[in-house]
Length: 231
Image (tube, rainbow, N blue to C red; front, side):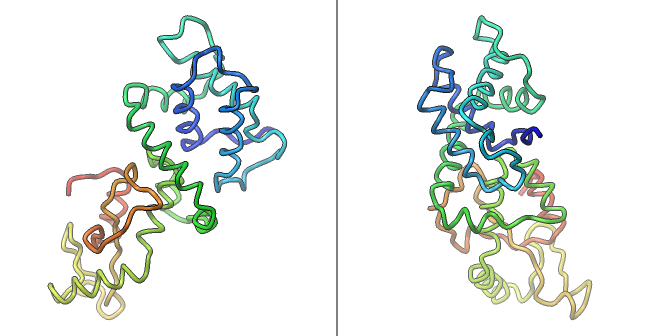
């Protein structure tokens, strides 16, 4: 039974390494490839593993980097032609933006280094948010870190109290929708919270302040997470 397809987080880490290696260094004995293999096995999405011995092993990682050789217009050889549509998408997305690629890879690695935090991030996301985490350009791990920060009850409650004290309502800061005005008592005190820091800038050491948080309705929150940035 074959292992699951590579997801964006894995491809971001692999592509970052690819651009730091020469074609002759892409092989399963390279310590950097062995290290990446070990790192990929620590990502908190291991529920889909089918073979612990083969899952993202050094040979598989080397083959994935060889797929990037096939996509690289600067490489004169053929590389491994069996690349996926997502391989091609991620390669084309970042080959001219290696600064962002390096930043995302660095932030993913920094998150993985926090073992207790990774355990927290293993909690599954359900419903509509699951779709958002798979489509996040920054990858699933940083998306889950972002949502984890948005659900810090202590900070969220402080933000709501501060906003209520100033405005005497909990209306959406983007569209002014007020749950209590529309739904009565059942909507009293209900509002979602959005972390303004871009996912690409988010690290485990990022300190969240009340100014980093925005109170918004569910609809606006979904659209912001899907890439709407008109605010």
